[in-house]
Image 1 (cartoon, helix red, strand yellow):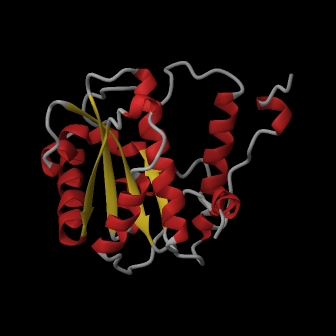
Image 2: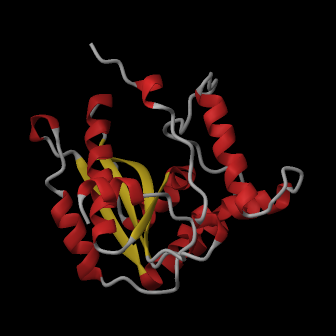
Length: 221
């Protein structure tokens, strides 16, 4: 698979097969991703791989915590700006509507929508999940380094026949997650990423998000 094919084939997988991924395979992917760009070669990223019974235990712990704290723990960052303006507000709205439409969940069925959203905190049934952190002393510029590291992992996973789903939803329970994985206070938790074999027949994996046309984002001088 060449890079162009991998970029075109990547999508956020929200339904995985019950099929284990060997640790050595994930280790190989993360090892290769170390070559991701990093300004000044700072490499401020950290990743924790959780799989098998450990992931099941984490999912159970987050589920228990959500029963006591249904809105999540105090967030360390906003996933989206508090006042999301256009065109970004409409893009996000269309994405959500298309996702629930693919699952045949109408807007008025809020319990079903909440149940679907809750699958985020189950890693969508993936056999493994990666949890990313960054050195707290880093600024906004270095968050871009972490993003490039994550993108590199996602593309390398495709080459290995795996799919992924980056999930900021885990940040709602960052205290529970960081305690479980042993992330030190010197690191800030960013997000999780489900990884495994996609269920190609599941309807949630059949749709794709819209992308803005080139002329909306690019200026050529």
